[in-house]
Image: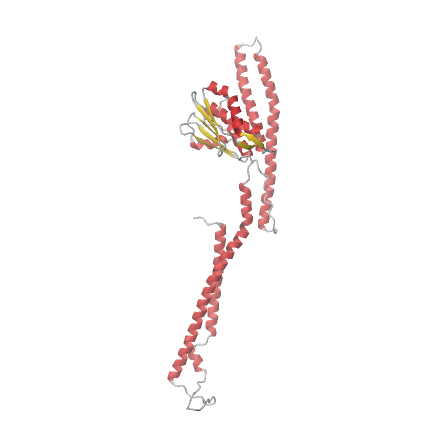
Length: 387
């Protein structure tokens, strides 16, 4: 069992105090023991007073001519002094032990409090680190207090977050700008290919090549569009508005009805009213990616079930090939596909589920995937409610 640093510090404080108390008790006991006289020596160095008492007469004291004590009187005096010495040392030992135990308990209690106060900045640093994500590096510790080692650690951590935030923002701006700049040449290429295919003198080989180039061009456009959406969602939401998630799903299902019919897939829905706070364009893209992914990677005659609920807010199930459990979570990574057959697939750019996860995080939610009981995939998205 692992002990927390707080517990270990408390045990260390209490243990050190107990050792110091034991050492003090031993020293005190030795000092008192050496200061108390030995019984035999004490009696031998004291004159014995002869107490003679007659009826009606006063006690006669003769200090100048002390009487020689009787042997029985000497033994009695030695016994009394010895008992007094033993009782004094025993009382001192018992009292000191009780006081030491009480003080040790208080030391453990105050050590626990002091350890908590000492470790409080570390808890703040840990809590801040847990809340950090690639798209949310705006949190800082801003630790107040004296300029000690913990303050230096917190300031160093804040400086590291500043540098990371600048690096991530620069990377996102580069992705967005590069994707935007690439859209124009791709659009020009598509136009030139379509013009070439429209030429009546184009031969079969040219047409075949043109169709292949069109498919490649379309895939590149989808990838760039996905990168733009991904960069936008990674930057977070500037504002939020109420969005009827059930209405968004209804419009997406209607828009993808032709694709589902062409693939031979039946789409079923269960859509109670559900309002979330977020960006309607990004949420529509999230639902579209999930429904299109469920239709695309399915089997003819299969099904897709889309359900809106409370928690999770959205669940999309589909039939299809068996998905290994260890591979389900990796599908949210960019350009990650399930097997080699999807690597060269021009139907998608490999960013669909990555955009889903990014949009969910931008809305303070999360997305999870798990294999279906009879194949296919189950993707659930948690979104905070509006208000």
